[in-house]
Length: 169
Image (cartoon, rainbow, N blue to C red):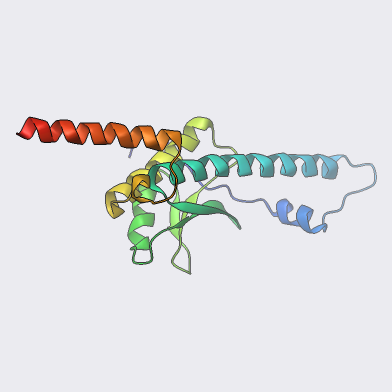
């Protein structure tokens, strides 16, 4: 195991109390307004991190995901129905991204608003690697319209395959 494992953000209890309006503070306290601003900024950042991860998964392996904020923050992967989700979760976890399978058999990959851009890349690449190797799927398998990056990647892969066929002859 190399590098530092990326862990899912453990949502602080104040997050829920602030969102439900149950939080209170003495009249002169500046804590509550500051906590509200902090949570709002953390939520916006978490959504931005999720958007980058979502785009990366969609463009490279064609897998959709959703944001889950419970006790821990994660992306929930939308994998094919016959997938061994326990194997996928364990493999992602071994790639230094905290991952688990929930009670419904869905795979969660940890997410945090405190991820750097390098951490976001690691989370995407580790998840993509596992999905590609274990499930053998990638975005070019999809019939949906492709982004410019996917078209370029597909064209390069096609050229390489043609070159290999020519070399074999």
